[in-house]
Length: 145
Ligand code: ADP
Image (cartoon, rainbow, N blue to C red; front, side, top):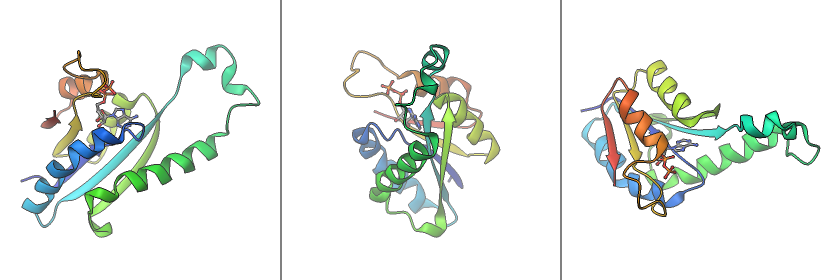
């Protein structure tokens, strides 16, 4: 039975979120005290930044991106149907795998539940973020295929 459950959500791939829903619900139903932490990470692209594009007048400003990501996260987690008192949402920017692993440590996650990879990338067994989480997390990781 897990108390602190971390569920990283890639808002750009709703089909992955759908895969994970029944497994998260199953864990939550096992423990009345379970808390679910949803995290979405806005990737930053050092490559673009190095080209000076991060400062382009066309680039939407950071605050706009953050508030849009947060509202999409709120939408994406509705199917989990977790009572508000038993969940938290987190927004971070940077490298998804680093931020996911970092949050897992700071909340002392008991388990991380992730999907293995985008269905369109059928040749990979594990996406790059899922692979890093499996390799480096200090807690159990449930990978949904
Ligand atoms: P792929 O490269 O096929 O997209 P990933 O390893 O990136 O595979 O994704 C697997 C899982 O990692 C996702 O289901 C999600 O749980 C997590 N993940 C990936 N990107 C992010 C992100 N930007 N924010 C939060 N979680 C993410």
